[in-house]
Each structure stands twice: as structure tokens, then as C-alpha cells.
Image 1 (cartoon, rainbow, N blue to C red):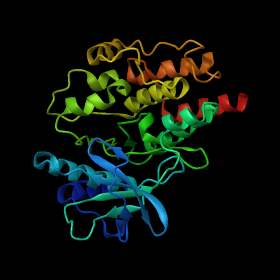
Image 2 (tube, rainbow, N blue to C red):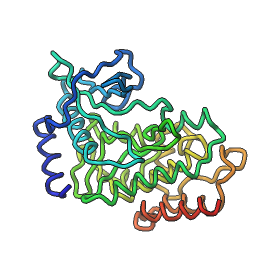
Image 3 (cartoon, helix red, strand yellow):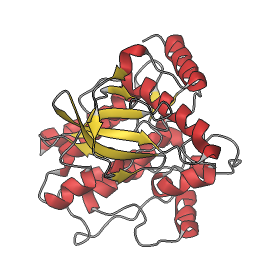
Length: 308
């Protein structure tokens, strides 16, 4: 898709909270028992054309945030429908329940294996390297698009597992294009939005940013988060799991020292070698330009897999 066209489509969708007609679905049914509570939408299990689907329903109870949430859903739908890769969760379309004009639902395939954290808890002997290579390939696809798409919220919860054990990036609710069309509107303030993903955030994202201005994520801040995801996949723990203090986590991130290498007993997988750890540490460099790109990550991880 041409960059200007995508930008225009995003802007139009955000302004009008409407979608291209080709995205509209009919006949979606879903259980009103919530499965996952997200930052600005709740996920339910449903069915569409005989297929199990995940139905993400905008949470519009609060009048003060309704417009922001509708704009975020509109942006997510437009971005999601314009990406197509085996390591990204597919998008079926948008559903509006009859008689509920305000309600917006984003529909995607249901993933029985859940997210990558849940999957690795059930299958602890899984080889981790192919999974982080899957994530790197998904990021490579996003970052090399024209314009580049920045995920902005990469973490284990947002990586889902297919029936065949392939990792797929999900949740484009606060994704952005490289030229500044930020979609970080899922909560009332920037402080609230950062709290949910602080442990994966790059230091430059947290440094002296006014509360009323959108955070300027980049491909390199995605790569910082990718390094944290690798840590999570290999250890089964969130970054900076040793503390629950917001202030302490923030100080660790801003120091630029990165995460501490886990001991053998702390590591859920035995194949975290020196080369892999050094690669992960490079993702946490204080200077964003010193971090690996998604493409170089794919090359490195592929070479590691070939040597295994």
C-alpha cells in the first residue's frame, strides 16, 4: 500500500470512527462471558462462519474516554487489515452487533494455545529459539513495510500461539507508523498507558515526556522490547521480576544497564548461550542506534538455529 494512502486511511478512520466497507462482518456470535480484559477492550470467544474467533469489544462505559477508544479501535482495524504475515495474528474484520450502533468489535481467529507465556507453562520443554525467531520475523515484516509500522506494545501477553506451535504477534491497538501517526490512546493519560508495559519500555520512551503528549516510539524501542520478550521466553519471568516497585523498575531501565543474566537454575531453557545473551543485551543499549534491527535479529537467530 502506498504510504500516503495508508496515512490518509488511518486519519480518515480515526476522525470518522468508520471503516472501509470491506471490513464489515455479519453473523458473528460470541459468549458474553469475558475471557481477557485488555487495556481498552475486552476479549470474548465467539464464532463466525463456523470458525472459532476472538471478539475484541471496545469498552465504552466511560463517556470521557469513549472518543479516544473508538479512534483507537478504528486505527487498529485499518493497520491490522493492511498487514499479512505468518507471524502476525490474522484479522477477519469489524463487527457491529445489530441494534448496538456504538459497539465495535474486532474479530480474529481464536488461538486455543493462548499467549506464549501460557503455552510455555504447559509445554516447558519447548525449544525457545524458533519462537523468538518467529517474533523477530513478524517484527521484520512490520518494520520493513512502507511506511514502517511500529508495534509499540510488544510483550509476552501480545504474542499468541497457533495450533502448530508458531508464535504470532497480536494487538495493534497502540501501533504507529514511522512518520508519527501515533495510536497511543487506550487510556486517559500517558502515565496510565506506560504503567501497563513499563517493564518492556525503552529508556528513551520514559525520559522527560510530558503527560499530555503521545510517546514517540520507534523501531529501535520495539527492539528494546523484543530483547525483553526474549528474556521472558527464556526465563518464564517478566523483566525486573525481582521488584514490584514502579520507581525501582524505572530506575533500572533509565540506568541503561539492562537485565541481569539469569543463573542456570533461573533459566527455563538450557540453550541460552553466551551469543544469545549478548544479542539480548545489545537490544537494551541505552543508545537506540546501537541496538540490532529486526532484520539483523532474524539473520542472527537464523544462524543460531542452523548451528543448533
